Amino acid sequence: MSLRGRAGVLTVARRLLAYGCVSMAVLSLVACVETPKPPVGPSPVPAPQTEPQPVPTPPLPEPLPSRPSQNLSALPGWEDTDPFIALEAVRGACAYRQGRQYARACDALKAQAFEQPEEIKQWLEARFRVERIEGEGLLTAYFVPEYPATTTPSPEFSQPVRTKPADLVLVDGAQMTPPQPAGKRFAARRVGELYVPYYTRAEIEAQPVTGPAYYMRPEDYFFMQIQGSGYLTLEDGTRFMAAYAADNGLPFVGIARTLTERGLMKKEQTSGEAIRQWLADNRGPVAQEVMNQNPRYAFFSIDMTKMEPLGAAAIPLPAGAAIAIDPSFHPYGDLYWVDADAGTLSGAFPAYRRMVAALDTGGAIRGKIRADLYMGHGDRAGREAGRVKHRLRLWRIVPTE
Image (cartoon, rainbow, N blue to C red; front, top):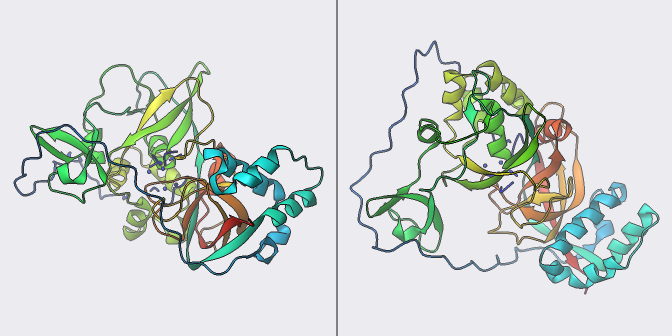
């Protein structure tokens, strides 16, 4: 997501429920877990004798069907919304390519000083209108976690933080074996003259780590992959960011379903914090087997200087005012109104109604009425993010001019 890269991070419990989601089974006394073998498929067809070719940037998605525009005052929850969250969303949109369609409003905002919340709402109402996007979907949430880490492995801190492998490349689908849709990029590795899908989670974890590494608790690392990035703190107090660098390109599979289908957790109890606790309580081969049910795997880069998470749009994410979207339906940098209620997880807030900027994406964020709300970083943000699984309606915010 990005943070999904994630990603795949930036579902938590998303980008958790949703590289964003998470979650194994207490297998009856499994004596050992056999390392999965690479899938055996039909004899591969040689790929062209060329190096990976760059893929042209796809055009912006076509606008979705919407109703005629209305005033912001017509939005559900507008009267009770926090105008400062809306203002942060607008600033996030303005930071993306000089605001694009909002350029005039962004220029006006530079010289604007607000003294009262109502002044902000009046300013927004004068410059924006809304268009309803037909249909209903799902709102989840994610955050940037903060985790302890060590420089040496131990039974508790056994999971290495893996950086992007040198053999992972992105190639056009036409170069893949078996062939994939042309014009799209796929994560691959080269075997002889062929490009084949990259390794699964189980296959990656079976490979040794070479060189210096940082180590985390396995359940923490799994959740950091879902969120897309995280802050790590070493024993001596050194704090730095592990940022999303790449992923293996395989589909995301939430382990909440695995846990409920195996009778290990009740459906209404599969919040991010509850799933993480189950993984911690069953740390080892049992938890690893459940985590392996999600083949998608994120890799990270270690940055000792950058401490502010960026979304896929390469813009800092304002907490509570940014969402991850499916970029095949929604352009980065656009403003939206989310109206979400009917949460299904225990302890959830009843509703989320606010203006947000589309600044990120994630492996589990697919569809036109699908969004992942960025909550910020730390434990408090993580607890709230892990309880968001709400019915969603979306409005597009457009300039009055």
